[in-house]
Length: 495
Image 1 (spheres, helix red, strand yellow):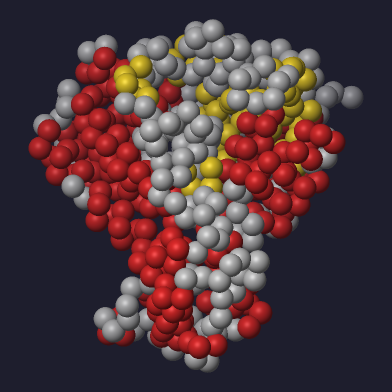
Image 2 (tube, one colour):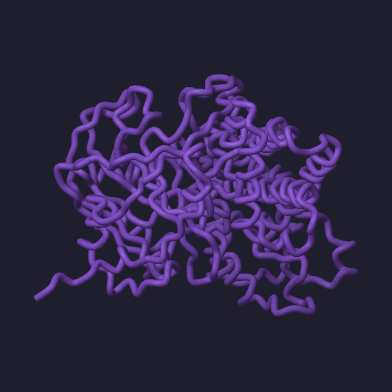
C-alpha cells in the first residue's frame, strides 16, 4: 500500500517573504539529528492551521519538524539590533529558520518558525541548537501568556533530538531539542535597522509594504497614499506595543531581553529566553542573570518598549517625515495606562462595563490600592490573584467589607493599612458590579476571576520543579498535568 500522506506537508504555504527576494534572508539546510521524539504537540494550533488534530500523528510531526522531510526552502532571516544599549550589526537567525508562511482558518497570517534546527550564516560560532529545557520553557511561556490574554507566539511542537549540548548557563551536558512556534511574523524592529545600517531605503519601503499588506491590511482601505499608510502603520504599531507592555505588566511577566531584535513588527510577544514571572511584586525584578544593571527589569518594560519604538523611527525616517512619527509615539503612555488598568481590573474580576457610568465616578480606582498591597505583602504575585479567585468561588461575595478576610492562609498577615484600603475598594467594586447593568452577577465575577488568573503561575520555582521531573526521571507527567490543569484544560498534550 502507498504510504499515507503527511497532512503537515499539504499545508497551503505561501512564499510571501521568499518573494521579496534574497536581500532579507539566506537559504539554509536543517541539521540531521540522531533521533526525533515528540515531547509536546499543540492540538489547538493544529486546528487553527486548518487540520484535524486526530489526523496528525506524532510521527507526522517528527517527520515534518524534526527530520524536515519534504520542505524547502528554509530561510534564515537577516537583521541587526540594539542589545543592552549597544548596536550589533552581526545578528540574524543563528539557530532558527522560517519554515513557512500561511493563512490560518481565520484568514490571519502565520509564520512557522523553528528554533534549534541547525547552524546558519549567522550562527557566529554557535552550534545552532536548542536545549530541551529551553524548549520546555518556551512551551510554558507561550501557553501561560496566551491563557492570561497576552498577544503571544506559541509553540506548535517540541521534539527531542538526542544530542548532548554544553551550555554555560545550564548543567551540562544537557539534552537537545528543536521546536516550531507559530507567530504573526518573525520580522523585527532590527530587520528595519539593518536596512538603515546598509542605507537601503528602497528595500525598507518594500519590506514595510509587505508588513502592512499582511499584518495591517485594513490600512490600505483607509489610506490610499503610500506615505500616509506607512505613518498609520507606525501609529498602530505604537498602540499594539503599548498594549503588549501593559499585558506583560498585568500578567507579572518579565521578558528579560527587550533588544530591538526581539521586538516584532506585528506587535506580538515572542522569543522567550531568560523570561521570568514575578515571584513577589517588585519593579526591579530582572529575568536575565546577565542584566546586572536592571536595564530590562520588570518595571522598566514600558519605558524600554517606548524607547525601542523611538529607535525604530531612525530607519523609518529614511522614508517618512519625523514629525508624524513623534506625534504617533506620544500616544504610547495613554494607551498603555488605559490598557493596563483594564487588564488588572480583569484579574480582579471586574470590567468597567459591569458598572453604571455614573456609579464609576463615585468609586475609587482599585489599581493603586492593589499595587500598594502587593508591594507591602510578601506573597507571590500570581498567588494573590489565584487565592482571590479561590476565595470568591468558595465563599461568594461578602455581604459586608468586614467579612472579606486575608485569603492566603500560608502567607504572613498583610500590612493592616494597605489591606483595609484594598479590601474596601474591592468590596465596593464587587457590589457595584453585581448590581450593574450588565451580566456581572456573582457567578460572572467568579468566572472572570477563574478565567483570567492561573491556579499556579509559572515562576522560577514552578518551572524548576517541572523540569526536575523531566531531567531526573524523564517524567513528563508533572508538565502534562500543569498544562492541563493550569493553562489549557483538556487541550494540550506532552509526553
